[in-house]
Image (cartoon, rainbow, N blue to C red; front, side):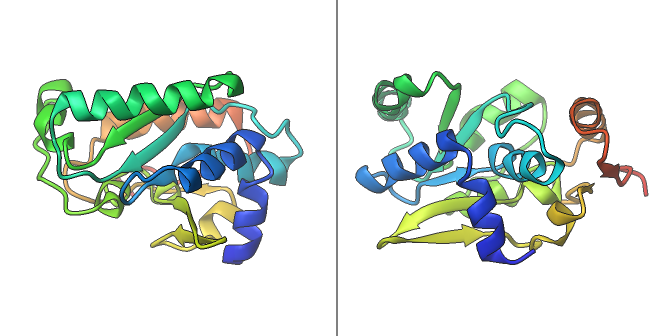
Length: 189
């Protein structure tokens, strides 16, 4: 699968397309639509399912050096208001703030990040290490592991710092129930 094939399939989901369009209108720094909503849309297209099948939420990352909760909350409320008509759950997170709350929420250390793609690099699975953003009428696509696993419906763990085998097992069990065609590479493999 090429970058352009991936992008065409991912943007078949009208929610993905609407979020990317909205990101183009906003001035959020280093903003990306990321992760599962992209790969799961592609899986749905490849397996003939409804385009939004199994997608729990849509994740947006941005990177703003203002790490106050008030600034992030303003962005969250604003984007939610702009996207409410979609009827989808959209999660927006300032990647400059993650290290402030992640250890308390997940019991694992989390170093400060320098850009949104650093957060993408920390996802549990390699196939969800994806981001799409508008760029001057075109799109930037961030996919450090390429698209082969996505096209072949292969899920493999990301061996980045703070990898949680238990969280990986829970995530892939949910996915396997929704997309039984997936081939899952075990965390200890």
